[in-house]
Length: 125
Image 1 (cartoon, rainbow, N blue to C red):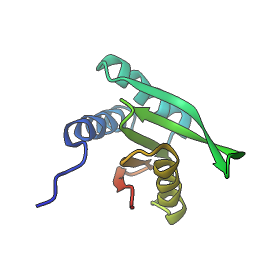
Image 2 (spheres, rainbow, N blue to C red):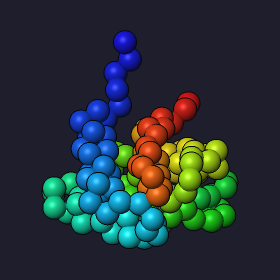
Image 3 (tube, rainbow, N blue to C red):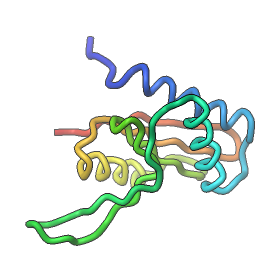
C-alpha cells in the first residue's frame, strides 16, 4: 500500500477548508474564502505564505511568474477556486505550480454554491 503524502498536514488543511465552508456557506467570491482560510491558518498556528510570486525561467532567462494562493509549511500548495466544478485547466495549473516549486503535493479546493470539493494532486516525475 502506498504511503499518503503529507497525510497529517493535508488532513488539517482539508479540515480548515470544511470549517470555512460550513461557516460561510457558498456563493462568495474567491478572495473571501482565501481570507477566511488565511485567518484559520493563523488561528491554528499553521505556517503559510500567501499570494507568493514564483518565477518561471527558460534556459536561465525569466519568462514569467506564477502566483500561488497558498504555500503551507513549504510542503503543500493550496489553490482555491469558486466554480461549478473542477476544470482540467485548474488541475494543470496546480501541476505547473508543483513543478515550478519542486513541491510534491497540491490541494485544489472548489468552494461552490452547493458544497466544497477538494482534490489532492501529486507531482508526476
